[in-house]
Amino acid sequence: MLLPPRARVSQDGYTVQLLPGGSPEHLEAERDLLAREVPLPLPHRAVWSRFRPAAGFWFVLVQNPVGHCVGGFMLEVARSRALPGHLTLLSERFGDSLPLGVAPLALRALSTLARQDRRVLRVDIEVFSPDAGRRQALGVALTGAGFESAPLQRSYTETLTEELRLSDDEHLAALSANTRRHIRAIHKRPVALRLVEDDAFASRLDSLLAETLERTGGAHESDDWRWRIALSQAAPLQSRLIGLFRTEAEGPESLLAFAWGCCHGEYAHYDAAGSTRRSDIKMSFSYALMWDLICWARHNGARWWDFGGITEGHLGSDDPVGGISDFKRHFSSTVQRVGDRWVLEPAPLRASLARGATTLANVIRRVTS
Image (cartoon, rainbow, N blue to C red; front, side, top):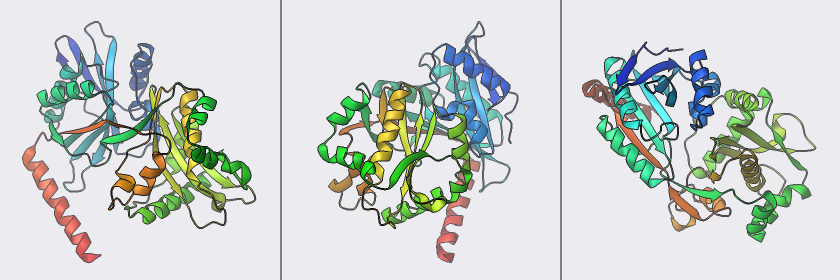
């Protein structure tokens, strides 16, 4: 695993340093931050770096003049395929773990550290917050550190959200009769909800996701789901992988559908799901899975639920994933802007060469296929 350079920057009496993700120093800093009620979304926690496959993880720790931890965020490290020997850095769901008062100095320090490391081609920051004022303040801080606004590619700009203030029974009663009927349908069919805990189901999870994306026209990149299974077992309050199984069958083929949710403290989100239509069981598999994750998030103290992005749905005639968005709208009608992306290229010429090489590789791949 790629380790960060032994780097430390001082700004206005504060210290910003890079720690290896998942290291004892990171764990100690995480405990300190949580004790001080600094929220740490799952991708910024040590357990994430323990299971998620990556070339490396670097944790950016901010300490005040008396040595107390006041903020921090994770950078996922990837090796550049376009320019061997170079790296790209990514921070997703960025913002909650960095108080606005220290964001400008922390981001300036990150910019300095990135420019000092000649391996770094790009630093990609995906800001996530339903608070427009917070996103704007972080945008100002990022601009001051040399970052530029860019279109989101991996994440989403808008999503549906739902407050989790009601009890399970009160929330269920507030849903439409049709949605309640779909949720309760599992009690009338030979199916059951169970956690996916066995690595033997990893390939089945990937194939269900591929089948789902094929129906919606999405591109599928095969992934090994064992790391999510292990993460959900090690951190059940932060990650839940729930499956819908046939009760009269065994083995991987008994899994008909699944959904994965992640809890980040104040909120939780619906990350991925897959299902098959090659079944004689006539029911919608997704409703009970979504409801299970929403209840899990509420029981873990989350105050609101993020449905994982939204598109026009039936309102957009050319929307390839419109059916998924239509399904989500059975649970909520509240659309919020939550995401922005900011990019820093410490060495613009080398970054340009890398983009050119990637573009050429994509053209060759399309022609040969």
